[in-house]
Length: 158
Length: 162
Image 1 (cartoon, rainbow over the protein chains, first blue to last red):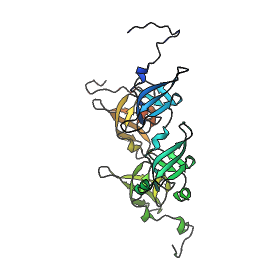
Image 2: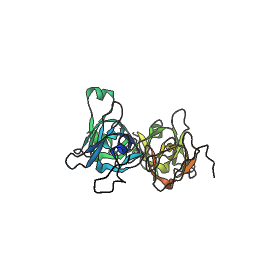
Image 3: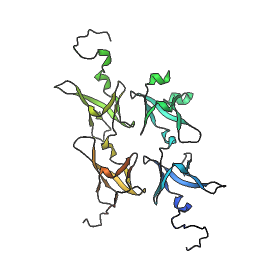
Image 4: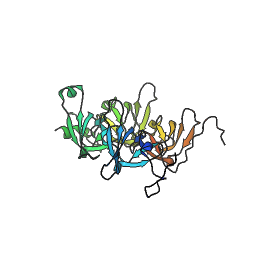
C-alpha cells in the first residue's frame, strides 16, 4: 500500500514493528533466546527503548534494552551480549572439575546484564532444604555449556 | 600415604596423581561441556609419560582419544581441556550473519587428527552438502554463525551443480 510521508525524512530504510515482532532473538554465541513479543517505546521521547522476548511455555519473559541489540536483520535479531539469565540451570564445576551443583538463581547489578553472583544448589536435598551456595562473579572462570570456577570447592564453601 | 620413597629427580608422591582414580572421572571441555568419562589412561612406553586418555561417551558414539596436549587441568575429580572439541560441532545448526538457517553440520573436517578445523560439511533436508571453510565462521556456540562476507548459497538437490 502506498502511503504519504509527512515525517520530514526519508523513511524508505526504516523498519516497522511488524519487521521486529515474532522474530527470533539470538545472543552473541548463537543461543536462541526466544521470539520478540513486544516492542518497548519510551512514552516521552517516543524512542525505541528495547524489546520483550517470549522465551517459551512456562518460562518468564525477558526485556532487553536496545543497547544490547547488535543488529536487526531480515531473519532474526542478534544481541551483542551473552544473556546473564541463560546461566540458570547450568552445571557448576570448581577449578578441579568437581561438580558443585546447578545454578538456581542469579543476582545482577541493578537491571543490567552484569552478573553479581550465582546461587548454586547441589542436589535434591538442598532444593528441599532451600540450601544454596552463593558464588560471587569474580570466582567464575568460564561460562560456556556449563560454568567452570577459578577456585576449589573448599575455598568457596568455607 | 606413608611409603618409602626411592626417587632420583622425580616429584614427590604427594604431588602425583593416582591414575586409578582418574578412570571413570568426567572430562570437561574449556567451556564446561561434559565430553564423557575416562575409560583408559594411556602411557608412552618409551618415555613412560602420560600421552592421553580414552573417553567413553554414550553407547551410540565412538570413544574419543584426547592427547595430553589438549589438557588444561588434571585432578582426582576431572580432566579439564583447553579446547572445545571440534568433533562435537557435528549436529549444530548453521546460520548466516542475518539469521537464515543454512542447515546442520553433518561432518567436521579436521587437519589430520588434530582439533584444528579444516571445514564443516553442512546440509539441510532438501539441500546438497556444501563445505564451509573455517575462515567463514564468525562464532561457534550453541549454533554456528557465519561471517557477513561468506556467500553461503545452499543448493537444493534438484539444482544442477556447475
